Length: 450
Image 1 (cartoon, rainbow, N blue to C red):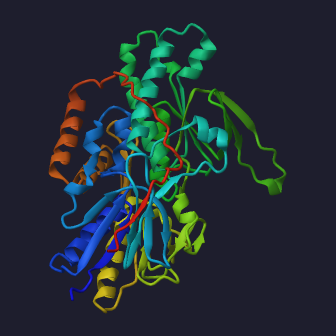
Image 2 (image 1 turned 90 degrees about the vertical axis):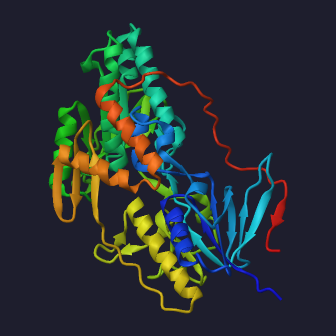
Image 3 (image 1 turned 60 degrees about the horizontal axis):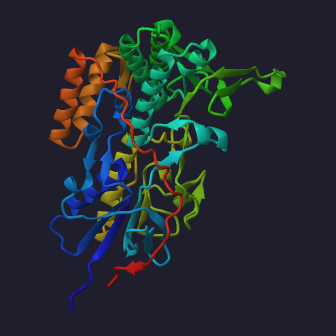
């Protein structure tokens, strides 16, 4: 009688999920008794640090996506959206659509790396009207929106409407918000030469941040350098400012004050047609409604990244709650953290299957980097603080080396080189902005246990 192979299922095709799958393939490359399955909503790995450059028209969309099937070797891949996880029955259910049946996949071991989604903090009007920058479609939509605003403003005679068309507000002063603001300003200034009726002074890019400084967690001097340089380049930064509403035409905000001092919050409104929200993330609903114990919406894990009450189930990345022992606060949700956890989870899975000792997850950040506009950046790496063009060059080299495929590295390098000598393309690419359906109709369920 042939012994049934043990199945490891990895949920999520982001940095954590793909890195964990690759490590598992290394550990079990000669073991035919182990089957590895990867499930992802998309069939590609998205290189998210370069999304702002796609939004700014510097990089082509195909440059920053890597087909998952070209990265994995012995893993079975399913493109599908996770409906629910049954940790008692050890089954993962995928949604069905009008074109494909729902699937139920049994597992022996599970790695949950489903990432996160944008957190609008309950403001439904902001969620309805604001743009986000988490997906490839988001980046392309923002690029089209910016060019559309330039086209409308060029021949608009009403000064109030014209100003609102040329005002772009980014909510969130973290890495995504600051890098997008810098790239967006570069795009606007580069494109302006083709819009002779628009002056530089009419273009307004604004960043709103609820905390007292931008780039929280970054070195204070570097954050101040970035703030000053962005301001010098014409980007207005409002600190200790929280958004209260946005109806598609006007964004309202208030100053965050010390209530103990009986200070009255200052209310302000800005006319704008474009708000880009980068202010926070929250775990996906699949995690929130799962049977796993959660805190702040994230799965509680132990020192080995294993889920409480369910041996053999691991959680990594944005959907896992792991406390930094030095600060007693959760680690910031970064790709660097997800990759580090992926390696530890793969190691511990291998050790668990081989009846060996698992190792505790210990994390030491290798550094942080951000680009803040054309040929400028800030970086804190190996205890050194770097700013200006050297930080920009370091950012490019580091992230270029992280792209897993050589052909994609070459495409990115070529686009960066072309950008040094030629203007950006200002064609507005019209495409159907089909809103994703929240739920999918299930036609059937197929259990592949046998």
